[in-house]
Image (cartoon, rainbow, N blue to C red; front, side, top):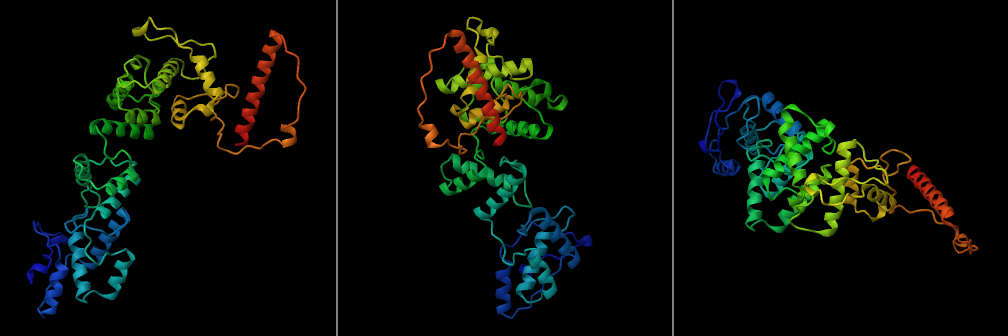
Length: 393
């Protein structure tokens, strides 16, 4: 029955190199026990070493689903050691206090199988730490080949062999787990990490990192210049990260969508103003000049466009609001702060019905000067009401 016995430890508790790991030693032990054969289960390390290594693994990964071939960073063969302990438990040779200590760590007494659900849990743990599922192919998490497993799932998805429910489960963790261009997504992940760790605002040149990050800054500039040549999902990812298009690239939209193009083109003008002035408090009558490549095009009324966005924030989609927020949008110029617009989904206090239905006498038609003064007064009152609502929100 040497095939069910784990190899004896060498000096220092390190397991000797081996190319074969038996998949079901517990089944072999059951058969040998039923036949009345003598069974030898050599030890690998001491109990103190085994428990300490298992505790470190449980602390690092939150479970004891240890592959049989796994060796911890200190060189201890934890995978084979746990297999050894399972055999001793099966044969009734494991002391009670050892079993209780392992149960406290969440010991899996049945040999864990590598299934889609088990690997999905490892993928979920990776995403919880890194915020995405773009795992390097050779990356392992606790001995589990998560990188190669995800690469296999992407290959199945591209060939139409990935079950629909498996794709939905991965989408729930990261909608971009299977990007169409992995090289583009790899650079995007680097940009997102750089923004999160350094406070870099890609729309504000004065905050750009220098030195070793110069290559990724140049890549961001290239994406802004070729913004309308990117796929819609790539455009959304850049906008969510605060990376708007540059004016020089707004006229090369291959998949022309008038509504989307009009907003992003205006956003590019706003980005040009922000790059030049370092703020987005645009005067209402400001005309933004066109790029040198389009000298024949008329100047863009950026001030009026910003004014209309402030006046009717309810007409913006959530993505458009986030895009303007990424450009340091000033929603209320009287406050000179980036206060968010009023959320129309919040219930507002209604006036009493008697007041709403009360008839008011018709006022005489004012002249032009009076109408201008009334317009300015009404606009000032509107801004005051918006300020009050924002303070109450």
